[in-house]
Image (cartoon, rainbow, N blue to C red; front, side, top):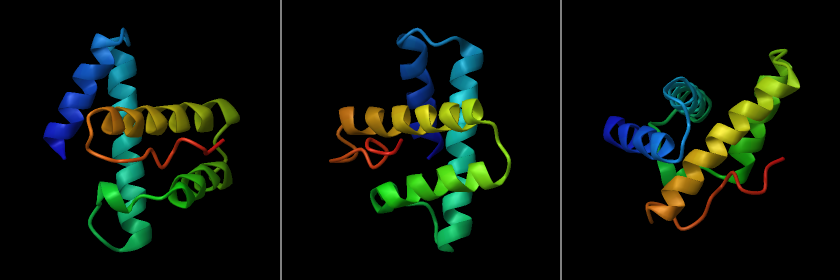
Length: 100
């Protein structure tokens, strides 16, 4: 996973994100992975993530009192990560694509 995150960070930087924004995106992904593992009770598997998981994570953030801008930032980072995985052909679909 660490190699994948390093590649994702490099992709973010190539797309023009600042180093601090790229690090923030990585932090979001790491927290999402930790949440997913805690919720599922299993080790994180990219192919197992569903749109419902992403929507549940959004609700989790909302119930924790995060402001809408923070929730939206988290969703954008997750969507960006899964979009990148799809572009890299690591996943056939982006499970975050339809989550608002």
